[in-house]
Structure formats: C-alpha cells, structure tokens
Length: 545
Image 1 (cartoon, helix red, strand yellow):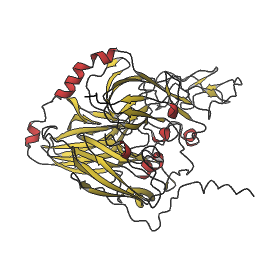
Image 2 (tube, helix red, strand yellow):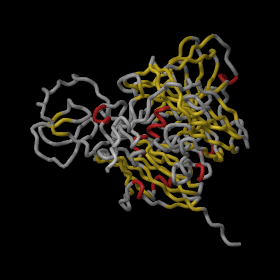
Image 3 (cartoon, rainbow, N blue to C red):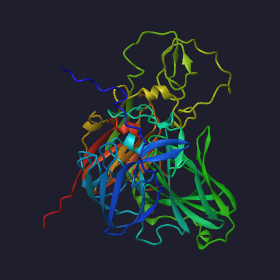
Image 4 (cartoon, rainbow, N blue to C red):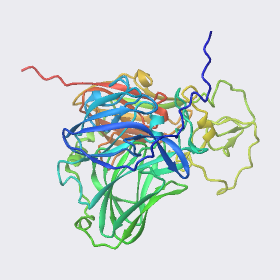
C-alpha cells in the first residue's frame, strides 16, 4: 500500500507560539582566550506590530548575543539545538580552523534537534563578524538566527578614538496574516528574487531608539543580516565617517552620507553627534527612505574623540598592498566565475508567437515582438492583454528593479511570481568558465600562500538578471581589484562582494587557511537552491632540510 503523501499544510514549519518564552533583548558577552560559551538555538515568541510571531533565537535573544573577544584569542563553543530543523553555526568571515566552519556534511555532521556540538572558534583578525545557520539558511535567518562578533584589535591604535561602541543588525521580515510567511520543510521558496520583507528590523525591533550627547563620537558596527534585501544605511543629522568594512579597516577613512550593504556585508562607521536634537537612522532607496529609528542627542561637551574626528587616517599595510597589486590588476584572471539563471517558471518550451509581450517585473513595458526589458533585462513573456498606450516622457509609476540603471533590485517587483518560485522552476548557477562546471561540480584547488585573481561575471543574458553578493568562507580574505575594469580606489579586506546585474568584478583572494571551503551567493534562497560550491586549499609543503 502506497503511503499517503503529506498535505501541503504538513509540509510547512509550525508557526505555533503557545508556551514559548518571550524573546529577550540582545546583550553583550565578553569572552577571553580559553573561555567557554554555551549557545542554545530555540524557539521564542516575539510581538511585532501586534502580531505574536514564532521565531528562533540564540540564547533567547534576537539578535543573539554580541560576542566581544580579543584578537588572537580562541574560545570553546558548545551549541545545543532545540530549534525546528537540523543546525550548524557558520562563523562568518572568520579564518578559523576548517573543521569548525559550520558547513553541513563537509566540515561537520549536522546537529540534530536535541543534539549538541562543540567547536573551537579563533579570532585572528580585528574587525566585525557575525554568526548564523548554514542549514536551511533561508529559514533560520528569517526566523532570527543571527548574532554579531566584535574582535578587539591587539593594537590599541588600530581604530580612531571613540567614546563608545554599538552593534546594529539591519534586516527585514515578511509577515502575512499575523505570522511569518510560511516556509516549506521540503525546500526553499521565493527562489527567484529571494524573500523580501514588509517589516524593517534594526537590532530585532521595528524602530531603533538611542541616546547620545552632543560632542560624543559613537562607533556603529553595522551588518546586513537580511535574506536578500540590500540596505543603504544612512545617518541624517550627524557627521559620519567610514573606517572599516568586512574584515578590518579601510585603506583610507572617508566621510560619508550613506553606505551600501548587501546581505552579509559589514561597515564600521564612526558618528560625531555635534548638535542636540534628533539624528535619524535611515535606509535610502532611489524611490523611498525608510525610517529605522533615531538617536536623541542631548547637550554635552566635546570629547577627546571629537577633537580627532576630522583626521582621516591611512592604513600603511593596505597602502602597501595597493602599491603592490598593479600587476594583478593588469594580468589575466586565474579563474572566471559566471553568474547565470534559468527560469522555466516563466520561460518554458512554448514558443508560440503572441500578439503582445510584457516584462514580468515591469508590466507597463510591452512590445509586439519578443525582446528584453530595457529596465531590468528580463525577457518579455507572451501576454494576451493589449499593450497600454505609450506614455509621454515623465509619466507613469516609478518601478524598482534596474530602472534606475544601478543593477540593483531594491524591492520585490513580482511578488506572486517570486512566491511561486522554487529550485525546480528557478535555477541559479555559478559556472566555471574554463570547464563549464556548474555549482557543486566546480572543482578548484589552491595552496596556502596563493594569490588567486578571480573574475566574477554577472551575466545580463540570464533569464533573470539580478545582483548577487558573493561570499568566500575562511580560506582567506580578498581585495576588490576592479569593477567593470575600473580599479578600486579604496581597499579593504573583504569576504563578500556585491555584483550588480551585468557587472564584472575582479577580486584577489589571499589564500591563507588550509581545508575545504565554500563559496556562494549570500542571498539565502539562492544558495539554498544550489548556488554554491566548495574548493580545496592544501598546506604548503615545507622544503626538505
């Protein structure tokens, strides 16, 4: 007798909140070399705008605890999984021992529900990092499983002087009918665009509320923990200085109005609050400014840190790197990786001619013959609806997508199509241009000490051209050499780089850590549907004595 197939409802993760503890606010855990951290994954109840939501938390809080550690230290972490799915913890950006990288079935066995796992986590580099799941990352990240790590530099003069520090996570959440929009146990959905939320979150709340005194300088460690949304983070009403990125400080500090962060990217921003009043925290898109909260600034006196705020420092080590990479900028790449997509959900085998065609993302873009959308690059689909009358210049509703010519998708412009997409009908690919290997079939091998130039090509002839944040696990760090042939002006060590639709980016990977390491798109629905591969790094053999 054939067993009955589970109903669609049975395939969904539970949204039940009865009996769950209420979520805690995030805190800071100070750890020193040799310390132990107990980290528990478990369900919590969280109220957002009147909706009681079932979410997941590290140690009961969303975000999980901020780990404040010393550069060069190592801690022991015991993870207990009382969540809704098997788990690992990936220590994002850290060049730690490979076996503790948190990639399921490659570097560790998944932690079963009710099980535990013990790992050693080391912190070789100063800067700002974070931790999150690497099993059903689409589900875990959306449900609240993320936490931050501040690695205090061994050099007390590494960062400019500030009066205090804060960590900020920016995120979004898709809430429908009083619940987080359902997740299928069998695999990711919203695979086309990734899951864009309709509720903005900052440090797990819908609005940030901070205090500052005029004359105070506050360091903000900011990370984008969203599944797919790009955040353009801005401070309005105070002076801001960009001092660091993914893995430490920038070559040159710069004054900024805003900083663009793709999923998993980080920024270290020093803010001088020079005038009493309200200082707004914002996410700015070409069509809209989202209010994320504010600092209330009271009267105060200028601090020592304020006196040195106008100084823009230069990192001598990165300046030396910049002077040495001229040959790397000019030479051919060692590897070429293409970003490509197939979308049978929209572009099947039916090529029957139609009388009208329209863009799936911009339905006001129509044609009487097949073609591509001038705004976003998607192929037009057959449409039975007659084309609307041509709009006069300047008329019509604004759209997201790539209409602004920036190669970025700021919002989900085709929600119902995106909702219907899954790994079977939306196929995201990383393609090794040399061998033609795709995703997990890519087989790269490097050796500790290699400096590998990788060309990343985000192809506009994809069925769905879209931006991608490309992340490399702890095999090393990389520098962005150039974007569309233009050399990068200000270097910073990175583990994630944003590729806009149609863009080509060259990076230089400094290979420093042996093991089996993953690389992938950091849009969670993309990597969980297969847009990832792993590569080997061998130890450098010592010459015979």
